[in-house]
Length: 100
Image (cartoon, rainbow, N blue to C red; front, top):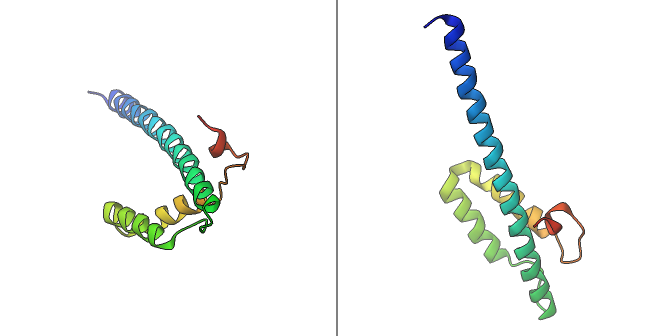
């Protein structure tokens, strides 16, 4: 195999992997939108019942789950997911609140 053929094969493999990453990113974005909508429903129900918008013990469970699954990098990821979902109220017109 020539250097040119090897480079072409490597570039094809990289492009295939990049397409796979793009697909995974699209799924992650879709799932984050779904999570934000469910979180908004929970917040609305909790507030309607006179409770707080967030429950710190529940958020600690989520943080622990991400840390268990992803190690030290799981904590900041979970914090960002929680922040994203905390910021979406049932009436917020954001991309995540309206994505189906």
